[in-house]
Image (cartoon, rainbow, N blue to C red; front, side):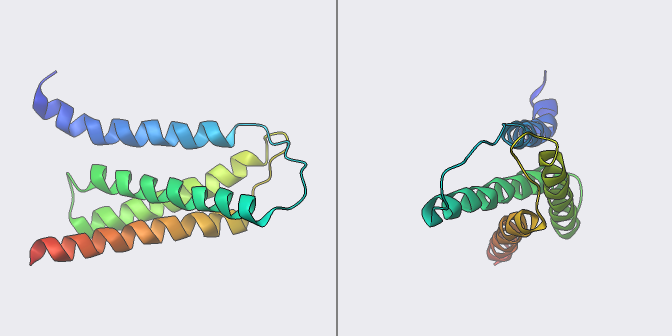
Length: 127
């Protein structure tokens, strides 16, 4: 495989691997019966933010190789949000798990943070 092909395929392979990681984590059965623990709750929700921050960044990387930066950022953010929604729906079918709009909103925080960082980086790069 030539380096040109690899450069085109690598970003999309990274996206597919990350989607599989998210899907795999969502498919894990939930059986957490311990009492509410604020630190554990914050830790789990922070991971949601990180997961979707990375997803938006990877999608942007893949899209931006073929289309404008603005379009790439729009497409990546919308696709990441759609995947977050489908992921929460997927969790409703997994024993011991629930899918909630609140978790989609938390995922959206990661998506927005990635978008802001990408915008700031692109502005800095233009200077």
